[in-house]
Image (cartoon, rainbow, N blue to C red):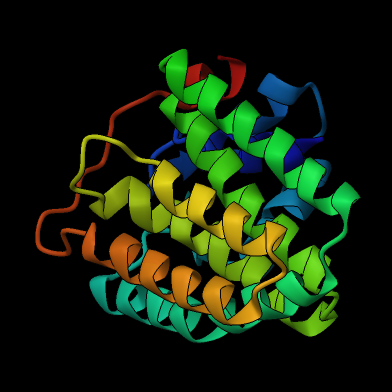
Length: 216
């Protein structure tokens, strides 16, 4: 419950990188003991969403510009290949699943909930990885998507914090046609576009209290 709640707040940009995670405050918010909170923070640290500093406590991780470059470079190498693999394994059912997911993403954007739209965009990439059926790639992409959320929270310079809708629609067309080459090229271009949307010279840390982020 604590891990899922903190992850959701991070992915939906309700809690900023660098925010201190007091064990007492987190425990009070979720109604659990410090022991449970401590275990949750260790789990989040393992996935690099949280950094634990000796004698200072736990903080939402703050990726450096170098880390941001490396994360999107890794995504650019792995995700195009995974998209091609997914295109070969597409069925009518998986295509419908992706289509419904995009509709949910658009509904979040239309309602002005950019944080949820961003979270759904990341989940769309994970669904593609699941369809590709390569467990190791899926695990790597899950980690990269998590770190991307923190990076976008810090460094995104565009007004819209979600994946461009035309890229996801273009991917859907390639998937519907079972066209691995097209899916690979579209995904490669898409990741390049996301990478270019970062302003690594001017980090932006939106202020929000921990209680507001987790109870909102």
